[in-house]
Image 1 (spheres, rainbow, N blue to C red):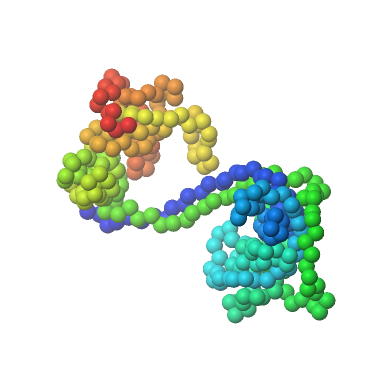
Image 2 (cartoon, rainbow, N blue to C red):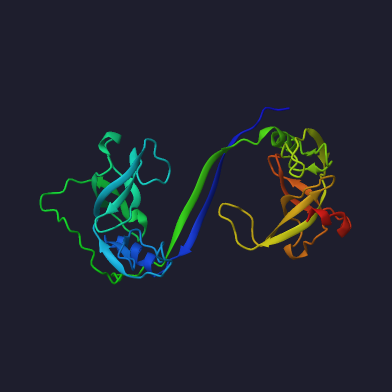
Length: 319
């Protein structure tokens, strides 16, 4: 058995969402160096603002302006900033209750070190040089020593939520997860076999089902699997979908078909792209075979074998 494999993996998805009137006003206000909150029926000022009272679930629209100064309520030091974080030098994650607000805003604090941060520290917003109507318009917070003339009673005047220029009505929030994947004994054997252009699964010693890719344990019986079984390479399309949206960094023209394929001898269908046939001719029961990638490490897609379609009863349990 080869040594267990591991590889760096990245899951990335840019999430696009529209904004309601409250969130739209909040982000448009940041572009204008103004921080808005929302006042509940009980008189509490929430920053960041929400559109429904978290206590009563009532809709709230009463926008108010709060100060760009505030107090650290809690914090954690980040000694090694990661890609996409607000600062590229060590900083503190802080919850800041802005003056006039009753809740705290999470952001970064640019501080010399953890000894320079404390609960109760007075801070102020450092605005980004270029602002687009996003939370990143607040570049970070920075320590602030107020003068003797600092007001002790911070007013929260009502605000219309209207600013010069076009309102921000939507945002794109990039989501990214970096991690190291270790497939383990069973899937390492599966990947090693793929490098030899073979497909292998493992048989459950109790129910005798063959799982491909193998998981190291039977999901039905909950017992370990160790008996390796070679399957395929041909198989049958059980179900499929037509993809009409082109994925970023994926050089495949749409529309194309992605299918569940039950390899001969397997009791679990795996995923695969179907090629070599017009997308609107793919069907359940279609017999297919693998077309290997240029590096030969995995099937690039599956194509029709030319055999008669499989009878429904032969794969109905694998749908």
